[in-house]
Structures are given as C-alpha cells and as structure tokens.
Length: 201
Image (cartoon, rainbow, N blue to C red):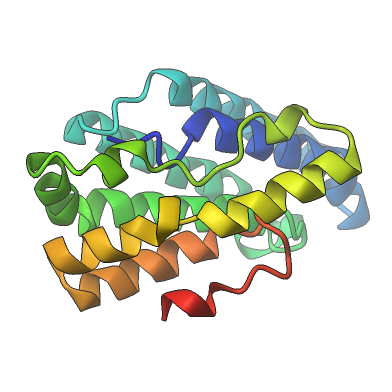
C-alpha cells in the first residue's frame, strides 16, 4: 500500500513550511523572545516527526496511530504559543500541516476498512497510486515546478482516474466522496492552482 501519501516528500515540504514559520511568522506576529524560542522548540518536534516518515509502515495500524498522534502533538505545541493564534493561524503556511494531520486522521480512522478491502483484492491501481510529484521539493526551476503540478493534476487519482472507480466499486459512493474530499484538501501544494477536480464529483 501507500506510496499514496508520499510521506517523505510531504514531510520535507512541511519542514520548509515550519522553518519559514519560525523565521518570519513569529516576528510578524509580534511574538516575544520567549515565544519565539518556544516556536523553535516546536520546530524541533516537527523535525523529529518528519524523520519518522521515512520508515513509516502505513499498513501497521499501531505505528500509524502513534504517527497520527505525533502529528497532533506538533499542532498542540504551536497552539501553546499564544502570539501565533489557534493552531498557529497567524502563520498561513501552518494550515498545510493542519490539513495533513486531518488527512492522517482520515487514513487511520475512517479509511482503514476500505484500505483493507483494496489490499485484500490486490488492487493494482491502489498499490500503484502515488499522487504526489516526485522530487518536487528539490526543484527550483519555476517552469518545471509548474509542469510537474500540471501533470499531477491529470493523474492525482491514478492513471485514468482509476482510484475513483476502485474506491466506488470496492467501498461505495459515500467512501469515495469522503476519500476525494480529504485528498483534494491536501492537494494544494502539489497541483496546479487551476486544477479542476470537478470531474471527480
């Protein structure tokens, strides 16, 4: 299963988000020196969390639960820094981290039964599905980044949108609706802003 969250890539993106948050967000939010130091402590926690992404076995439900809890601990850490607002809301980039945690909740809590069914039927589409563009976090050429995001839009739910068919057939329309909603929510940093997901309705 699940190259599908491409956790190492997402984690790298989050680490970049977090560093930006500390470098500019705390200062812009008028945080005290003490609050800024606490923000750096949160970044260290986020960094440790991201390191776990490389070895995470998405099929191990106990491991996935610990990982999900760690994700929320990162948000909780930022929540304790009053100058940053609720969930670090004064740092817009933190919204990406929050969306990711919600997606982890969904994968662990709500999608688990469907995931088991897809694995049991040895769905090639599900096994191969990886909507995140390879090496996007390392790319500096804006033209290549734009092209990658455009390509990702075309295959976000698998070759020929096969995930829509697989999830509907295996788990039903309601599961597909929920699955689609959660993964479109985290798509923002990886697809072109003009990506039209209406074809999946």
